[in-house]
Amino acid sequence: QVQLVESGGGLVQPGGSLRLSCAASGSIFSINVMGWYRQAPGKERELVAAITSGGSTNYADSVKGRFTISRDNAKNTVYLQMNSLKPEDTAVYYCYVHLTVVAGTRRVYWGQGTQVPSPQ
Image (cartoon, rainbow, N blue to C red; front, side, top):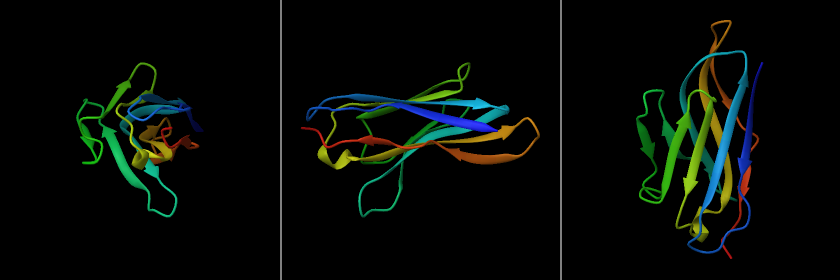
């Protein structure tokens, strides 16, 4: 079994910052890609940022220059540093991890979701 636990979030002022974390644990053999999606009310889930095991990153155009994704491979944890937050960043943020379990199966696991409220 694999578990993803998200943390972070909270109230933020316009232009402020938040940091989300997502830790994976369980029968993990290796982790390939880690990343974040978000879903705003009435909208489809969209990719925010992703990072490979080698450190290559990919960002949605809407967050480039404001958000930074990073990972700590020793802790199986991915982070999303969000700066200069805007009202349009309001959404539920989901971390995802593409990994191989000890038994050899590869699949994607999802976090429980973290609400990032509208800056106020």
